[in-house]
Image (tube, rainbow, N blue to C red; front, side, top):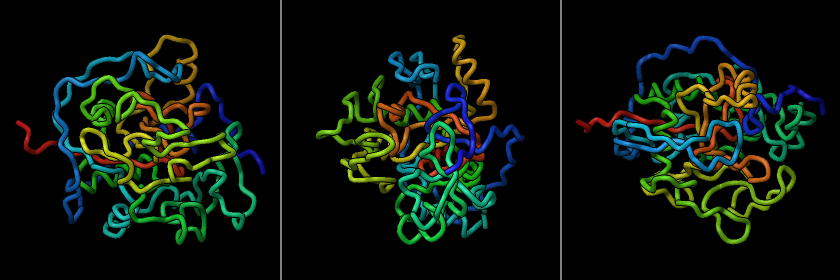
Length: 323
């Protein structure tokens, strides 16, 4: 195994490895061409005063704090992350080719790489991320794995920020802002850590979401029932009826990764993340010992052309019935 890419752990997120630091102009998107109403299966979220961030930050220099208020107009949000079945419909209608398919490779977590793939390249410092040629949203863990790793009701993965935006435009919607995402994730509960409240998941008897249990990155006990992604509609929904707002897969937002802090370490971190986009919610690989980011206020930044087995997205739409 050889190192594929060196990363400064102060300036890059350990959660989502990046292909690069793309600062190219954002791609212009065409008008929606969906033949179906993608907002069916979406929940109306009330507007007004909402909360963003926390006064109880867990990951330093990530921009989690402080807790502040944000004013939002009502909107609709998909009940689940976009599934493989949803994305297949999009590709069938538009002919969209994902960036992972264009590049010819994507990042796969080491434990999911089949022996048949052979030697792969790892990311320096986070060697559990392997570059796998031929991995994409269909061939989730590499060539020949669609039959075992692709499930129609699971969240689509190996989608870049650009792919997610293209799908959202086709569906007549867009990616959420950070404020919208947090407002939806809180489920009407206010200042809480998780979509269900403040009770911490554990490795004994409480598994409210799909995250890592065991010793990362070597041993996943799968106490929540899943080694990788779970169906998009699994576990208990939050107070708004939304599934898997934390855990399972990271979700792209519409915003750039930004850390408003005067701290030197935060400034250093941001200097290495120019052009990165913000994602929220954590994934099935999160664990307090490594990446305690399956909290509502937690954040991660990744280059917009990066793709992995643990990042997806959900769509929001304007609330058509709002005054």
